[in-house]
View 1: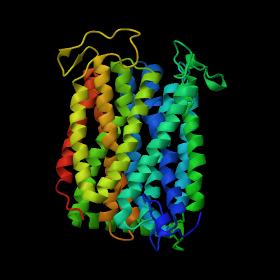
View 2: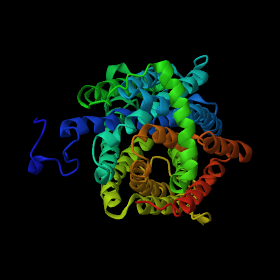
View 3: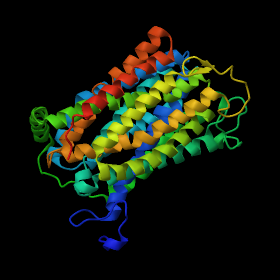
View 4: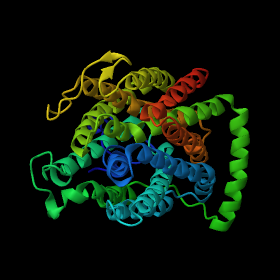
Length: 467
C-alpha cells in the first residue's frame, strides 16, 4: 500500500490529509477497538458476567451485587489514577509503552478467568479479582490509545475516525461472540453449541468450559489484533524527559489542567455530564445480560444471540453516528442518544416474566416454546436493539467532542480527565445498582437508578457550547 495515496484512492471513511500519517497507519489504529472489544462483549456483558451470576455465584441477585461491587472497585482505581497517568504520558511523549503495559494486565486478568470453575474453592474470588485487573488494563490502554487521535486526522474528521473505530470494535465483538456461540459454548442440557456441534477442544458443557474460555480467547484476540497498531501507527515523538522528572511534571501539569478545566466552563460541564451518563451506560451493559438471565432464565445461547443482534445494531449506529457527528455536531448526537436510553430503561423496567408495561399480563412462559417466543422476551430484545443503536454514537461522539474542546497539545491530560469523568462515579453507579438489588431483593430495583444517570447527564450536556 502506498504511503501517500492519491486523493481519489483514499478511503471515504478515513482519508489521508496532508501532514498526517498514511491511511494504513490510521486503519491500524482503528484496529485497537477491534482488539479490545471482546473484553467488553464477551466478559463484561454477554457471556462471562451472566455465567458468573447464574452459575458461579450463589444466586442471580447475589451475583449481580458482587459483579456491581467489583465493577465499582475497578472504576474507583481508574478514577484516582488515570488523569495523572495521562499527564505523565503527555510529558514523556510516546503512548505505545503505556498501551503495552496495561494491555498485558488485560491479557493476564482475562486469561485467569478460565480457572473460575463452578464449585471450585475460591472460584468466585478469583473471577472477581481477575475481572478487576482486566478492567483496569482495558480502560487504561484505551486512555492512551484515544490520546493518539489528534496526531492521526484533522479535527473536522475526528467524528468519522471515532465512529469508524467504534464500528470496527463492534464488528470484532460480533465475530468473537459468534465464534463463542457456534464453536465453544454449549447448552448444559444438550451439550451442543448454537450450531448443533460438539464444542471444540473437548470443552465440557457441564462445567461451562465454553463460557470460561472467553477469558483466554479475549487475551489471545487482543495480542493478535493490537499488533498492527503497535507496528504501523507512528507514536508521538519522545520528549527526552526522564520518567522521574516526567512524573513530577505530569503531576504539576495535571493540577494546572484541572484548574484550566474549571475555568473553561464548557469542558468542565461536558466532563461532568460525561461522568454521569457514561456511568449509567457502563452499568446498563454490565447488568443487561445478568438481568435477562435472572428475569427470563436465559442461558448462554439466548444471551449470546441477543448480543449478536445488539452488536449488529451497534455497528450500524456507530457508522451512522460518526457521520451525524460531523454533519450536525456531537452534542446533538449525544442528546438524542440519551433521550432514547431513558425511554428504553423505562421500557425494560416495565417488563416481567409474565407481564409488559408494568401490569399488562402475558401469561407464563411455555417451556421449549423457542427462542424469544414469549412477548416480554420479544420486547426486551427490541429495547436492547434500540440501546445498541445509540450506544455507539453516544460513546464515539463523546470522544470526538472532547478532542474538539481540548486545548492543543493537552489531549492526553484531557483524555485522562475524560477517563476520570467516565469512571469517577463508576464505583457509585454499579454500587447503587448492587445495593438497590440487595436491599429490595429485586434486579429491577437495581436498574431503576440508571434512568437518573441518563436524565441528569442530558440536562448537563444541553448547556455545553460546542464548536
